[in-house]
Image 1 (cartoon, one colour):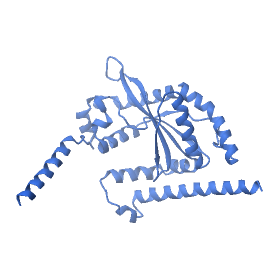
Image 2: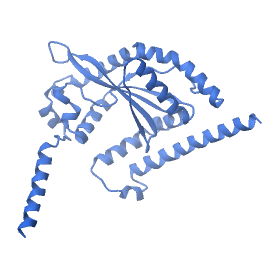
Image 3: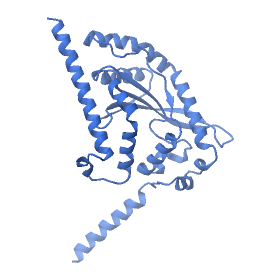
Image 4: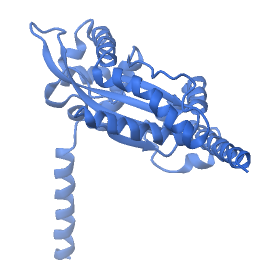
Length: 274
């Protein structure tokens, strides 16, 4: 009995230690203000929105992106020689955009709730480390164009000494995400500019997936809200009315359709060469 008790006490001590080290997770805006006072200052979110748009314009004007836009024509030509089809409907890559309100505040609070204050506002930074504060969405005509463009961009950014971190999501909205951090200045509620790190996202998906995403964005948002509500089980997989079920199956259907289109394209090209 004493041995079992000592083991139980040890486990309880470990759990208590883990809880003490766990990041503060917040779901109420008032709680966030208590940890990051600047977010409670009047005009903070509007200023952050304005800054994100400024940073997006500056990012789009950087040589690494202006040169990538020029390179896109060459990439499309290479893809055409390989598949017989164009890589993009529009030969030019789009510009970066900043995150707007109210999504900016909602995304920040959601990330704080999931990850903790310390990860979203590290070292007291006044700018949240959300992964799409500045972003660009690139649409390819075919599914195999997604990985093709991601590979080209990773190599292009590397030549500019910028590391792109890749994340390919294999559920829901299928897309390839590339991230990089960018040092900028933020001057809200301070006498001097504060150096901050801004996370920029390059999102690559097919035109079909992007179109469906634009028209059913609310479904994916409801899915995220449901996931954040604390339901960790898999019961939603058997509940067709659950937003997570709808988002997952819709994403799978689009992904399958994109894959079939590629197969049909390749079959036609093969027949034409006979």
